[in-house]
Amino acid sequence: MALYSEKVMDHFRNPRNVGTIENADGIGEVGNAQCGDIMKIYLKIENDTIMDVKFETFGCGSAIASSSMATEMIKGKPVAEAMALTNKAVAEALDGLPAQKLHCSVLAEEAIKKALQDYYNRNGIPYDKADFPKEETCHSCCGVQA
Image (cartoon, rainbow, N blue to C red; front, side, top):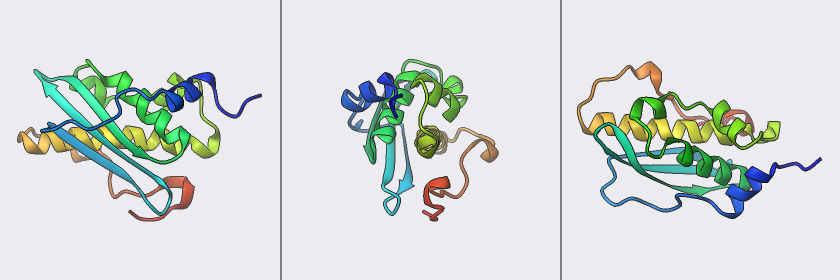
C-alpha cells in the first residue's frame, strides 16, 4: 500500500491556487519554521463569498497537498461554509493522510480560519473568538510554540 493517496500526490505535484493576492481581504499564517511547515492563506471576499483564495506553503508534500485541497474546497463558497471547514474534511477529501501527517490538514484549517479572522477584524465584523485558533503550536509534530 502506498504511503500517500493519488489525490495527495496530485495536489502535491500540481497544487491549485498557489500564489498571493494583492490587497487581500484576509490573510492568515500558521505554522513554525522549526517544524518545517508554514502556511499562508490569502482571501478575496465579495458579498460574503470567497471569490478567490491563494496560498503559499513551505513544508512537506502533505502540507502542500492540504493547502491546495483546502483552497479548492472553499473557493466560491460563502464565508460561513469556509468557517465550517474542518481538518478532517480536508484529510478525507485527499483520501486520507498518514497519521504522522494529519497535522498538515490541521494547519490548513487553521490558516483559513486565521485569514477569516483577519477579514472580520479589518471590516469590524463581530465574531466569537472561540471559533478561531488560539495560540499557535505546531501540534503533535513537535509541540513547539510559534
